Length: 253
Ligand SMILES: [Zn+2]
Image 1: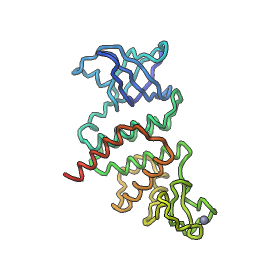
Image 2: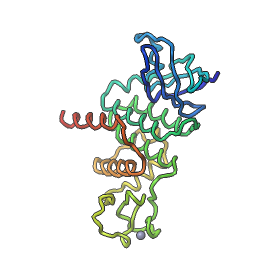
Image 3: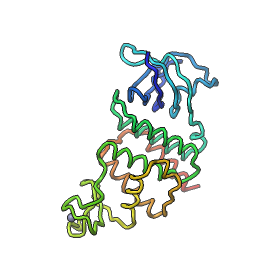
């Protein structure tokens, strides 16, 4: 028997009362686990199988995957579902985390980061975007693929870096500036480098009260999104499509 805390990343229905869960566990990292137990949909215990749930699980090793013999809810984060935009961002972060985690590799840093993220988002009333991009920045640092921001990726010069190359992964200085029409080179118009450094040096919880001007937030959003899509394979992520639909509807409304 294994006792572990875990966050449900995904639930796959495989039969009337059978589910396969992708769990991000505290002790074993990301694993798949089957649940054969019949849970009544209205009982509290069904929450234990739902995405976002933070629970305590008793597992035993099956032939191919783990089996869940018992689970209890510690935090269901049910308030995330009360706002569609918030829900869409959180669904994206769950799927993003699922993508970047290797199976069966314990990762206490990301486990705690995801728990903090869900706690902050559950309480947060607006400006979800900043916390999502901050979560990604912290994940990039943790994976060792954070862009180089302090000095030019081409010559090492630390002054007058006004461009950012998505492909080369960092800033480019004035003298290396090739004036190319490369779509993967972004102009840096605001103080986003300082903002990214501030995000890097503070915990997610410390960022709860951070407010950014709209143009700074937009630039941060464009740059981090483009960087992640270039360096991490996010193909076939349903949550991205869902999030884009929600945001488009939000703008219309
Ligand atoms: Zn340079």
